[in-house]
Amino acid sequence: MLKNYFKVAIRNLVRNKSFSAINISGLAIGMASAILILLWIQNEVSHDRFHTKLDRLYEIWSNNTIDGSIRSLTNTPEIMAPELKKRLS
Image (spheres, helix red, strand yellow):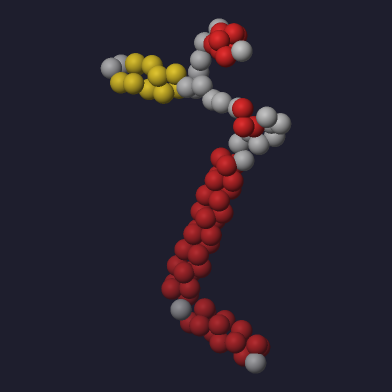
């Protein structure tokens, strides 16, 4: 019975070549896109999970005005770390 299903599937693929090619390529592109999105989400969620004191980990952002618009950047001055350590200790 399974052999018959494969025969019918192959016959339909050969008979409708362009329709089959469009469907198979669409399926492949969709699956590849979904896998890439899932891998990206996994990378974003697992960011900095190796730290032992993860609950005390913070990220500092600075808001700068560049060409009349406010932009948020993760670049901070070098003096920021010792100053924060002094103020928060």
